[in-house]
Length: 250
Figure (cartoon, helix red, strand yellow):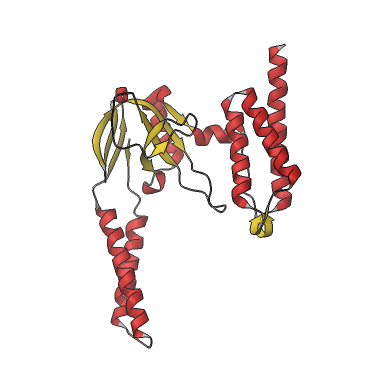
């Protein structure tokens, strides 16, 4: 499978350049400010356009990965890969971050400087790809990696959804602080996904303590009613799994 580069960045860069040119061509009052804005837009667009025009290849095949992007140009055989993880960084102010593909090389293999960490065990990892750079959907990339990488590949996006699928929470005035809520939901999902009873118990305790003490309120935040409902359901899911663990043990 060959991934195709997303053309959105190139189009945005062209818009910046053309917009800056138009500001220069049609001056009006406040010419100095307009010139500064125009030059800035042209410079920003030119940098983005140069980046978008660089060679790009990301192939997933039976022998391994074929990668050609800034900072990394090489073939990576599956024998060099200890783990591949499709993960999504924590949200920022309620906005989802694009998923990314992380690679942990086998001991003794250096691919490029490790700038990330395996989200579950903390091992140094290489960020191979941010999925907003390509046109394919995460599900398509995941299917190709599962087919060719086998047990080396873990789709944490799918595993988290299977463990506990949190709905999109409404944002409004005087709601719960979004980053705090997102961290609690991620904590519970990861505990459910881990299969570890002590991790589930710790996550449940953390969520219950946070809700009992009262979640912080922000000027703009998540709906308090929706958030309380979701966190209650998450605590229930964590408790149900613990009950199942006890029944299995007996």
